[in-house]
Structures are given as structure tokens and as C-alpha cells.
Image 1: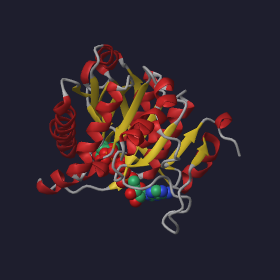
Image 2: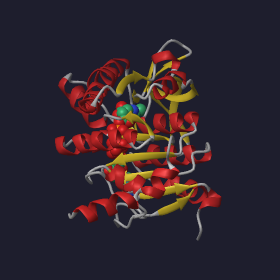
Image 3: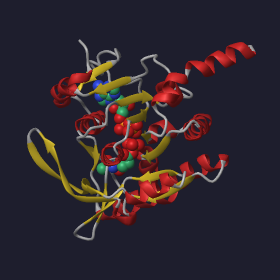
Length: 293
Ligand SMILES: Nc1ncnc2c1ncn2[C@@H]1O[C@H](COP(=O)(O)OP(=O)(O)O)[C@@H](O)[C@H]1O
Ligand SMILES: CC(=O)N[C@@H](CCC(=O)OP(=O)(O)O)C(=O)O
């Protein structure tokens, strides 16, 4: 690249830099998107770039595959119902240990190679997330899935204080209940709840597929834009991990977040491509009035 091309690439970002100056962007970093070392470093570079560019990034991380590995090691069987891990009390201890003690630390460490930015939080801290026991709905019938929580209250004060101090909050999706128990919350759900509570300008969900496939697994045609109404109609047809993910995007947009994106975390620098270009990366969910047919 010549110096002129470099300058042109930078200046192309000007409209987005102006638009998102000071904006809070909540980034859901999925466990499947963090399996390769070189991609993890690029992800952290992107987040720090956003911070220096004047945005206020907040990371909510997952860790599904990392939890699976630890449960296997402990000889604890685990399965998913409607995209949610059935969580026994003994599995809950492992989930918390892996998310808060391992994955959170790894993400904080990657970001902090660049300076004193990242501060890790569990959703339990300062009552960030309060949850109630959630039941999965299978064929219209509520099914008990153990210590899985749905978020009933978000108290984002601690996150706001960190943002005001120029930090990058890194949040694990564990919540406390009014009943004193701890709950395992799907990380997409947690990210959407936090994006809504913070009045974020965007929710960006990094996963291991290109976006929402129109007719998965029969075809890999990616839906580029979808309205909240059309997504609500499509939800009952979705399977596995896409159920909580798309439900989360829908709730964020219905809760006032102007746009939610599902993007491919296996693509290097996908976060910068999404925020600073008009290339149509992944799937964008918009409020009903925001989608032109
Ligand atoms: N319609 C769909 N479009 C894309 N992926 C789908 C769809 N339905 C199910 N999936 C599956 O959902 C997975 C993503 O969910 P999940 O594994 O929970 O990701 P993450 O760990 O990033 O949260 C994809 O890898 C894919 O196998
Ligand atoms: C209730 C529930 O399913 N919790 C998830 C929490 C982690 C998560 O969501 O991780 P990913 O984003 O990598 O899928 C779990 O136990 O796997």
C-alpha cells in the first residue's frame, strides 16, 4: 500500500468517526470466535482502536466451548435445550469459574497489552445483572433447565463509571438472583440487556458463521438486513445457538438500540470492517421503520 492509499483508507472512515464519536458500542465476543490466537489478538487490537478513535466499547464475552472443555475435564455431563445449557448446581460452579476466572481474564489480558484499559466484571458485581430462573420453551411447553437465568434488572452504574474513566469494561454473563442464587445467563442475552440499559448506538455480535442464514442448514445464503418484525416471525424456525442470539438482537432493537449486527468473528478485523465501512458485513437487524424493502 502506498502512503496515499493509506491516507485514503483512513479518510474513508471519516463519516463513521464523526457519527460514532463518544458512542457506546456493545460487543458480544462469542466463545466460538475466540479459539484462534491470531484472531484473538486482532480482536483486541480492534477494540483498542475503537477506544482511541473516540468510541466507548464495552465487551460482553461468552465461552461455551471453553465451558464444555472444563465440564468434560470434571466429568460433568452437559447438554443444551433451545440453545441454553441445562445447568445443574455443580455445572454452575464450573461455568462461573471458566467465565469469570479464565475467559474474562484472557480477554482483559489481551486488551491490556495496549495499555491500562480493560477492567473485568462479573454480572454479579455491583448488581450489574439481576436474574430470575428461566424455563426453556420446547414445543410450547416450559421445561426446567436448572440454574439458567433471564435478566430482570440491569444496574449499569459500575460500567458507566468505568467508561467515564476511559476504561473498557469486560463483562461475564453471570447474574445474581433476588433469591441469593447465582445464574448462568446466555452471553448474547446479557449483551443485549446491557446494550439496551446503556443506550448503546450498536450491538455487534461476533460468532463463527457469516451471519444469519436464510434457510440453515439447507443453504448458506446470508440475510443482510432484517426488520424486527420479520425477525420475530422467523424466530420459531431457528435452531440451536441462533435462537438466543437472534432473540438478543431483536430485544436490543426493540429496547431502543438503533442497530444490532451478527458478524463472522473468524474474519480478521471484522469489528473495524463493520463499524468503519459500508460493506454490508454479516446480518443487520433494524427497527421496523429502519428497513426499506
Ligand atoms: N439460521 C442460522 N444461521 C446461522 N447459524 C445457525 C442458524 N441456525 C443455527 N445455526 C448455528 O448456530 C451457531 C452459532 O451459535 P453458537 O454456537 O451459540 O455461537 P456463539 O458461541 O458465537 O454464541 C452456528 O455455528 C450454527 O451452527
Ligand atoms: C445459559 C447458557 O447457555 N449459558 C452459556 C454462557 C456462555 C455463552 O453464552 O457462551 P457463547 O457466547 O460462547 O455461546 C453457556 O453455559 O454456554
